[in-house]
Image (cartoon, rainbow, N blue to C red; front, top):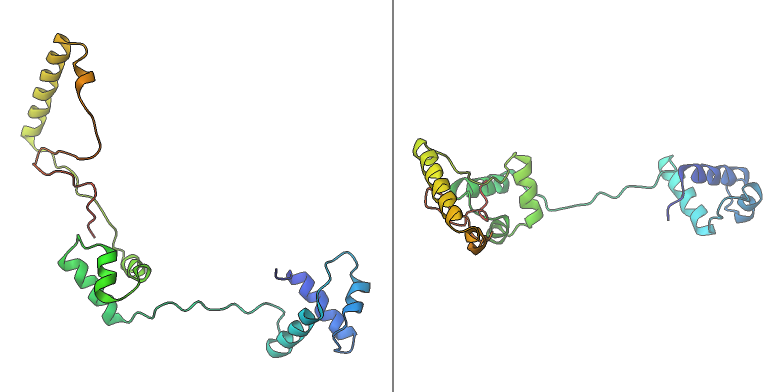
Length: 170
């Protein structure tokens, strides 16, 4: 566990007061209620402070894949040619990680969307007719509605397409 900024400052003061010697006992005497650092912690802090002038821990840069503009353009062209292409397939075809593909897509403000049903003038009449038929059937047999199996496995639309809710477009 890293030391807090105040604990690190206290350790620097102890090193200074101890004439730059790394003394654990000095810290224990001066700050009895604070957790006691190991000698190695003092040594690392002293080295860090002498090298950088700061008590802060160095942040390590996480190096991901370096994606050049040509690669980005290639990914975007693939999506332009085939908007149904999944990030997994693009990753396999380009030998780039899927997370990098997602970063490229987000960077260029692409986002998945689903096609939605466009209603036409005649669709309203068809819906009303369907509703009338269903009301008549339910009027004749109150249990009719219980004999209908409702499922989310497929979506049937008036334009004839089926089960499009699993398709992604970019």
